[in-house]
Image 1 (tube, rainbow, N blue to C red):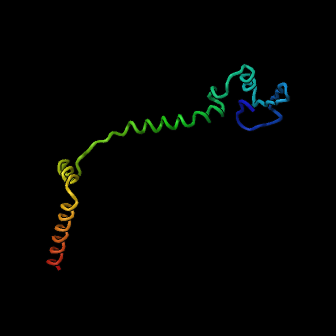
Image 2 (spheres, one colour):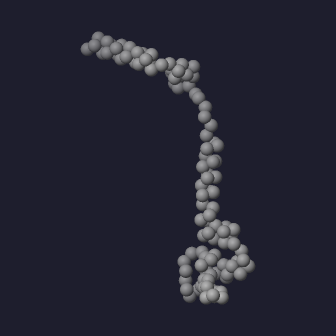
Length: 115
C-alpha cells in the first residue's frame, strides 16, 4: 500500500491492479498521482515512509544542538575562590582526611564546652 496517509477506507480508496495481480490501494488522488509519476515515497515529506526514515536524523540534530550550547567553565563557590578549589582537588587523601578529623575534633570540643 504505497503513499498512504491515515486510515484505510475501502469505499473511498482508489484501486490499481498491476499485471501479476498486484493490487495497490490509494488514499487519495494525490497518492495515486505520485505513484503513477514514479515518485519515491521516501522523498515526499508528508508520507509515513519519509517520517520513519528521517526520525533518527531529527533526534540526532536535536542532541547535537544541545551538546554544542553547553560550554564547560569553572567558577568559584561562595566562600571559596577558584585557587582554593583547585588546591583542594590536587591535595592527597591523607591530608584531606586529617583536615576533616581536625575539624570534627574542634566541633566536638565546642559542643562539650556548651553543655
